[in-house]
Image (cartoon, rainbow, N blue to C red):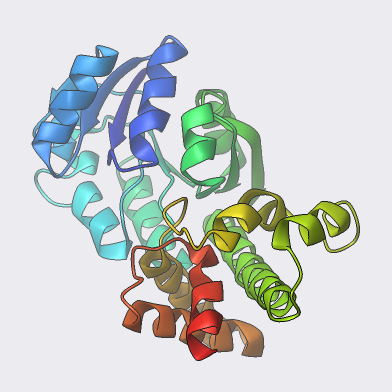
Length: 290
């Protein structure tokens, strides 16, 4: 058992914090919209706090899952930020997908206070969070990771340290680059099947067990066939993530021509009004083109 705080109760953070309670940990929570924190506390029996600092006070581990770089800075820094309430020896674990730059910045700020910092972005979507089977890719000092890893097991099926500070975020970038390519390929394949007069479900039934098979194919082909896009990670968030990937590629010299192109395809989906559609909506762009 540990005393934990969880900052950010969106579609991922809400169930993740619940898994901590189910695992026997004492949990305090903070959310920018306080009524959501109150609802979580009423459901799970934890404590809702009005500020990140109040949630973090006395915690052994503080977990965060917020929106972007600036959101993360906001919950960490300042007089009411989590760092102001944390004691030396405590650990901060960030599950937000952010830039490696802000991760290293906050790692240094935490280190100056005697607080450990692990970047630990997640993959698996809302379903993975609800079922406690996320993949968690981590960066940070080995000792900091080893201390936090048993806590993350409450909602992670695969939890692994990839290297020093920032390595988790860089690995998440690899994840998003691969997903973008997979979804575009799947969208083109299913769109081709439709144009060829084939039944999408029958086609996937044949090919999903072969070399073309993927998680996206198995879990998204039916909703794509039905033109339903309310089942996963939103396009707006994917564009945020791909922006991080492309900016980092500019820094490290990686060539990402396909990712850059697919990012623009997602921009087209946004212009169709699909910013909150899930990422498989790339096929809707193809259908709109005819």
